[in-house]
Length: 247
Image: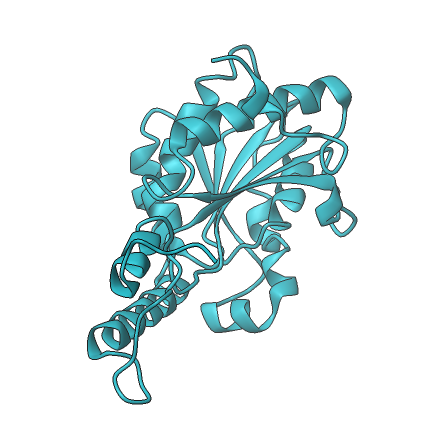
């Protein structure tokens, strides 16, 4: 057995620099040390706040200054219903459907509050800006800002607008180490009620500096969107090969 040069405390401190996981926290009697217990409680409070904090579409629209936007709601009338009835969060509000502009769009970006409005407020506008800057020549629909929305709402939006592809930027389910993680879901030719997760491509944990950067997310999305248009598909048959591209 090899000898470990570091003491136990130094070893755990060294490992903790490489992960947000709660490892080697020690104990005080039969409980966690006070500092780590308080940190855990604070993380739990941040996760709850992320789920229940209201969506502010004005803040996202301000970050997209110069980009046309349109606002919609899902069929869930309030946050409690949204959390209890996931099916309603996947469907457009009947009245809001009539407000969506129709056209022969190559793609539409949908910014959805999901389970963390904080993630959307902090990251969504930057991802949209950096991605669309890489889509020269694309006919893009106005950005849709969706409240009480889940990923599949994008299928309903795309069909109503006539878009060939949809990118849903959504606040991911918060955990005890991240309450501000943004996800991006890409679907080609979406159809409400039919599209499955196997037909989507997902980029997760967009939240610099601890997760995927805006530039990294935009580069991956732009490449995936271009390949999706060429192949006419998304999902398990569309591979993310951006890490293998020359820089």
